[in-house]
Amino acid sequence: MGRGKDQDRGGIAKVGFHRNEDMKAIEVLPILKEKIAFVSGGRDRRGGPVLTFPARSNHDRIRQEDLRRLIAYLAGIPSEEVSRHGFTVIVDMRGSKWDSIKPLLKILQESFPSCIHCLELLQ
Image 1: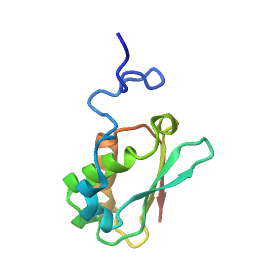
Image 2 (image 1 turned 60 degrees about the vertical axis):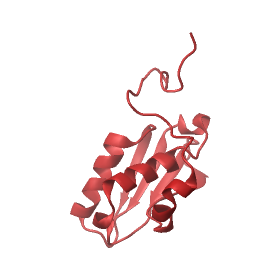
Image 3 (image 1 turned 90 degrees about the vertical axis):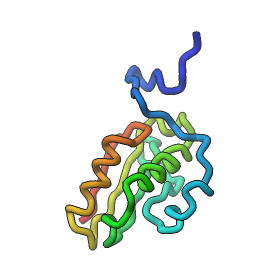
Image 4 (image 1 turned 30 degrees about the vertical axis):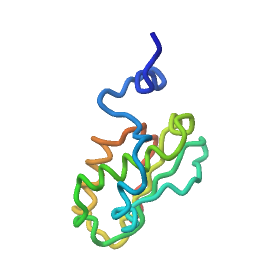
């Protein structure tokens, strides 16, 4: 029997999460246009992809389900080989209150379909 793509990630299985490579940009286009987050194509020093949440004052206005779908889409952009290094996530909190960032962090913790190597909060 062959391995499923979620069964072996450095010896750690992630139950219930998978890379959503079949999702198309058109499915998340409205939230993409809001520029809530992006994957620039750059890499961190280890070769892992970088997911950035730029500064905004209205993080609390984003529906959690929209944010989950956006994160699933963006996490599926880098190749599986690159994603295995683990994402570096940058959250720019400038202009935001801590209470508006907490839901984002919770969604990342619960729903991110790949490994997060490092999370940087900018204040």
